[in-house]
Image (tube, rainbow over all chains, first blue to last red; front, side, top):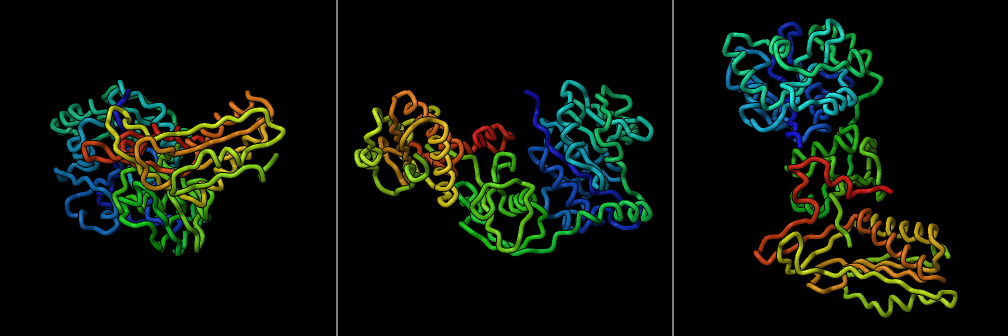
Amino acid sequence: MSTAVYGLVLSGGTSSRMQRDKAALAYAGRRQLERAMSLLERHVARAFVSVRTDQQADALRGQYPQIADTQSGLGPVAGILAAQAQHPGVAWLVLACDLPRLDDATLAHLLSARDPARTATAYRSSQNGLPEPLCAIYEPRSAALLLAHVAAGKPCPRKFLLGSDVKLLDQPAPGALDNVNTPEEYAAVSAGLQDSGASPARRITVQYYALLREQAGRREEPIETTAGSARELYLQLAHRHSFTLAAETLRVAINNEFCDWSSALRPGDVVVFIPPVAGG
Amino acid sequence: MGAAASRFHFTHHDLDTATLRTALADPHCGGFVSFEGWVRDHNEGRRVTHLEYEAFETLAVREGERILREALERYPVARAGCVHRLGTLDIGAVAVWVGVSAPHRSEAFAACRYIIDEVKHRLPIWKKEYYADGDSGWVNCETCAATRAPHAVRHGRS
């Protein structure tokens, strides 16, 4: 059996070209760190935000489990090294936070095509064919190699992948990994993504049963939510109440009927998350 | 045959299986099959002292009625019923009862099997086991956090 995959969203960049915090840039009403985390959480056992130590108290980043850099001035590789040091036994799916076109299909394909026997699994850039280091899976074995690479004065993760035993994949949705570095690129991508629309806050009720009832410490709570779907709501509540059940193990019901995780939430809805059942 | 002949419900009291059986009597039927799920004193190598059942009742009753209707549509049987316990149950107690009456036995067996299998997989019912060592745990839930998705199979939507 291959090792578990944890997820890491890198949010510690200086965003010097954008001249503002990239993690907080919003597309269609959602800040891109939140978008990246909610996407990643659907695909991995646990997801973390990589932060610099001076970002730990930040409200946006504080919503999520964090892993703080232990070295400064190294760029994104510092986040990868810190995550590998904290959980050495797992593979890491590492994502840049500024990939507004990233989609579920791209992450699902990366995970299904993953080869745990290699050092890493990564996509080829759709522009130059080089490995994309910030939407890639780094196997546990890569940790010592990456550390040695950095110790040799080479902190570039792309160059690390170029010199490693990497499984390279073509992107299922070319363009999904195009990142956004300048205000001009932001304006262009933002215009293209607006039609999905921001979710206004709605007042709903969530009811809990069994293990979730015990972990939430209540049977029911009113919630004011901007979550775009039932899945997003669960991920927010799972963080708030430290639920141990992964969304993949649950079903969801709205207004006393089973429904899809992608279902939108309307004002007054009663939402129930259904842990694995054990009748009979 | 049809929805009127089926009934799923919950109870907090001991099941009176003789009465439940009588309710499925039908002059067209030559056979009756029932299944009783009992509380066992062990599970996965641990001594169990008692159980607690909890359900999302509104949805479970709807889904339970749906399962009974499906059984009546799939098999030529006359009547079907299912009752599930809630609350605290001691060892030996009847946790679930399924009964089916039919003109012929093979359909009664098949329909009874279908109902109990679907009930176990589809109804939002949860079981907390209490162990002899003082520990307790929600069955099928306590290991989900560490391993992703292996329990998704328990949520079959067939």
